[in-house]
Image (cartoon, rainbow, N blue to C red; front, side, top):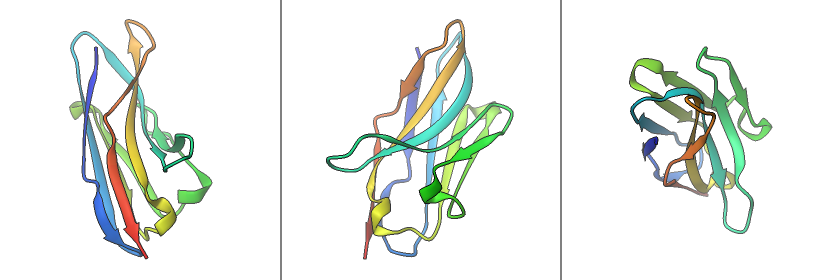
Amino acid sequence: QVQLLESGGGLVQAGGSLRLSCTASGSGVSIGAMGWYRQAPGKQRDLVAVVSRRGSTTYADAVKGRFTISRDNAKNAVYLQMNSLKPEDTAVYYCNAVTTFPTQVAFWGQGTQVTVSS
């Protein structure tokens, strides 16, 4: 079992920045890819960015050039630096981690609210 603890959400004006953090805890597991998803009211949960254990990254087109995902494997942590925030970035942001051992299972954090005012 893996637990994900998120922090860093909040209210910011358009053009501002926020940094999200997520730490995974669990014993007897290996964690592979980690990432961030977001869900706005009335919409589906969409990928924001994902980073492999080796550091390969993938971004949604809507955040390319503004958001940066990174991770610290020693801490089982993943971060999302969000710059030049727009009102359309407003959503609940969820941390995601996929284990590779003993089985491949996806775990989710509880979500953190990001609100960008215009």
